[in-house]
Image 1 (spheres, rainbow, N blue to C red):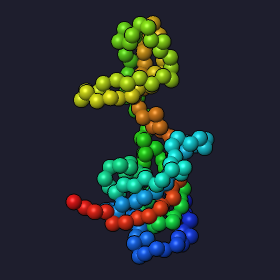
Image 2 (cartoon, rainbow, N blue to C red):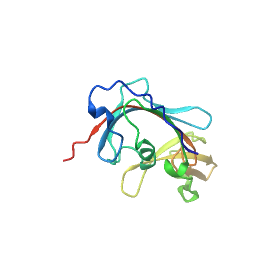
Image 3 (cartoon, rainbow, N blue to C red):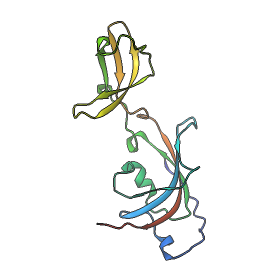
Image 4 (spheres, one colour):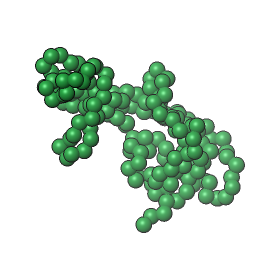
Length: 165
């Protein structure tokens, strides 16, 4: 697993800023796709304008950011990202049993359904129903992609110095 060699076909250079590699304190404009092991696409913006963010600003998981370092405008690359670098491994402590009475009696609860729960801080936390019986509902609060190897495809549109305030 790890990084594949990016295609480093030199892009058409408009100015010297296009030679800046992705690193801390750079703003990166990119298109990306996330795919599962079976090739199913989880997310992609290749059909839209590039997204942009500053490396290190928290917009992208640090594990994904590390793979971008050193890429330049015009580069395309594909990376196999292990669970530890993206959504982590499933944690059995994140699977909770909830009394059936905490759900509305009218709700037809089935495995695979996603419900929103309040966390301790009052925020929203999605949980996937794993099993249901007359008395209990088993809810998995792990990230749905936990434990999965993610294929991360990127095309770097441009890289520029970030404006730090």
